Length: 195
Image: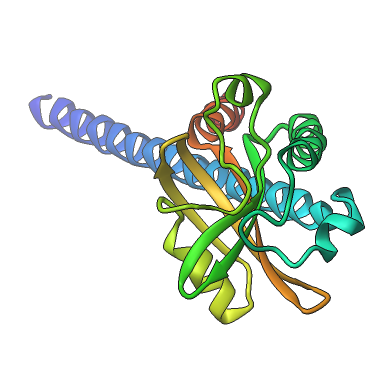
């Protein structure tokens, strides 16, 4: 009788252990799959929005030989607000255009919020961008899109940097989504997978 209980106990313990391991493996796989799905969706969204920027900004703006003082503040703010409306419509944090000159990154166009503009807390035309991700320079050098997660004075983001050439000028277009936004979407996906 003792051996039967002991055998039953072992069988139950083994079954319980296998069930626990299987459940943990499923949960880990679900979390991994959710992370990959969310990350791929976000990267597609960043890429699509970034590629649209060349068509959103006025052609005359692209044709300016960009350098300090080449664009009046009112012209810059008009383009900034147009880019901000699009940025809001696609649910991103920021879209912006940069140029690399002598290994330094300069802001050619920003999509700051109206609050940032009113507080004068935005990147002005051809302002040095010292917090730029190293991947901006990598995108400029390689002529290939780059993705990075980094922090600057405006927050922590997952960003795409797309090098483009318009006429004889080279630009890097950036798009940002906050990592906080990604975490919210990821939590919702994990709930769907686990439930």
